[in-house]
Length: 305
Image 1 (cartoon, rainbow, N blue to C red):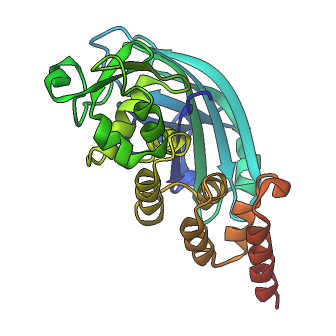
Image 2: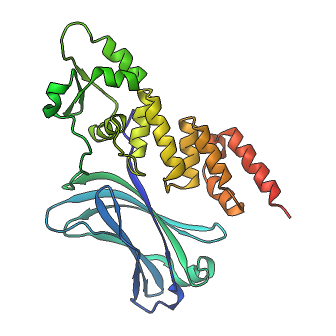
Image 3: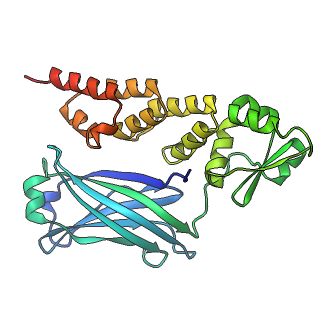
């Protein structure tokens, strides 16, 4: 099983765009994702709307980020102008984009509302080098050796853990570790199908920390499902219902993948109009939960005049 990609969305409403003069620009607020600050910029240039993505990471060290940037200009009616770019950012070159993202007249005609435009930037990070990882909430390194009775090896990292504790949290580990009771007093077990960063977050959650956010949850969910860790799955579902700012569409996809009925019901209760229905139907309907499709159809019929 491949590790989840690092991905996030930057969404911003740029205001009073119609009155931008030539070469004038607007910036979105800076947001931090995967320990890196990001922002977007638009400008008016030679009859076009220009769009740029900025990485605000300091120049004090050498770093490199390879990413895919799918920019979407979204209208109130649901019309979308999109562009996909694969690019690299460096400590010496921290922005990239398209100076001719869309013709200005087309933007004014189809995408501007009350002087404003909405741009979504869907970012997928392929590779990061020279960027520090987030601070660990709990250590499972060799310093915990005296308190552990098993070692789990993930990629090039070792995690010193309690067999009894993991067995009570996960039926997978209950079965796996019970088979290792004989022989070595402290077995070392290699785990495949995950990366060490995701496994660190997963263990932190199992041990009572709060590592879940919109960036870590995909990796944690994948491992909680793979290792049949029911409590971890419930905590992830609670986060998605109460705190996550993922889109309704993303939440429905997660609810289907991990059989989360409470999350599904919570999303459906937040769908209040035709625009909401359109937003969750923008991926292949055949891949959707049939009960969700039926509920959306019923809602759509209720909105008919």
